[in-house]
Amino acid sequence: MYTAQTLRQGLKTRRFGSKIYTFETIDSTNSCARALAACWAQEGTVIIAEHQTGGRGRMGRTWSANPLENLTFSVILRPTAPAEEVNLLPLYVGVAVADAVTRVTGLEVRCKWPNDLLIGGLKVAGILLEGSLKESSIDYVVIGIGLNVNQRTFPLELAGKATSLALQSGHDYDREELFREIMRSLESRYRAMLKNGFGGIIPLWVERSRIVGRRVSISQNGTVLTGTVKGLSVHGGLIMEHDGVEQVLLAGDVSILDTEQVAH
Ligand code: BTN
Image (tube, rainbow, N blue to C red; front, side, top):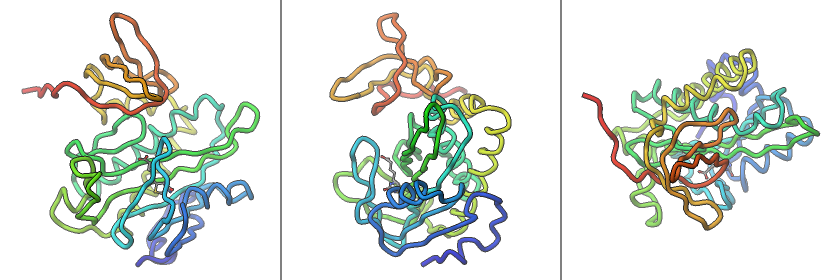
């Protein structure tokens, strides 16, 4: 089991992980991070837990992960940015975590709109952003990351949907090393975004998703839309064309309907 001290060993980031709170058991690291953020916890503060009794996913779903085998943590951010940029943050987190995982494991990680990471078409990580806006700007955002690392068996309902780094490569990984690489990656991309603008994340995300041009179906509040993905809007929405009409979607669950064209 990790401790705040072992996680911080060799971590040279300035903001990310400047404070790390570790828990053996907690309800949800996102809930804890939100409570701390509301009490002025500094940017980069991390809450990490071995076991969540009420781990939360997007759209009211739960997130469960075996203790001692995975990474489940949240980070507090306070970006100085207008509120409409908030939908670009999941893309930033996806790109940063995907890059870190690839650097450590050599595995190819794809981004799935809006917040998932896939390996071999199966979900390896989920990202949950929750925040608070103050007037028209962002007060704080909590980024919650669940990464399946060394877990090799999943509940029946996740069969054919979930995977882990260990299942994909056949061997276990050092969770602390992965955590530190994710911190470095989150920090360097964050700095670049604050300096150059949030929009720069869009082409990086598109490159790692390979979703443009694909036929997809999107379920959103009980309705299912099908169409072809044209790209991402400047605010991170999915631009979809259906019967010659383009539509920008800001939330939903995407399933890819066609098979990928491989270039020779
Ligand atoms: C999803 O795929 O729907 C998002 C899952 C996010 C799970 C992580 S685990 C750490 C953090 N704490 C939570 O309660 N949820 C996020």
